[in-house]
Length: 118
Image (cartoon, rainbow, N blue to C red; front, top):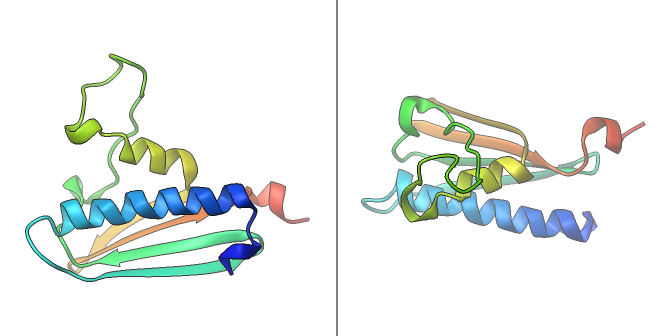
């Protein structure tokens, strides 16, 4: 499935999944073990991803705010804080929700709808 994506999208998928899964391990399950479910589906030239965990929810039960990465533009985050800006730069249709103790992050990778399909 993934092999049918262009090389750039495969590399971006690797980076995105590494960042998202790292966040689950460090933040949702930072004090112990837990399961992480990863669902991938190739649809019309785009990779749809869903990551589910039952760890701690994101602060405010919402995605972190956008940050400007220019030097001095925003206060520094712990450990560099580049994960979410990277995720936001590479993902399309990024969404998060927490319901009944379940965190669900979804995003797509690949060309925009107008670029993808006639």
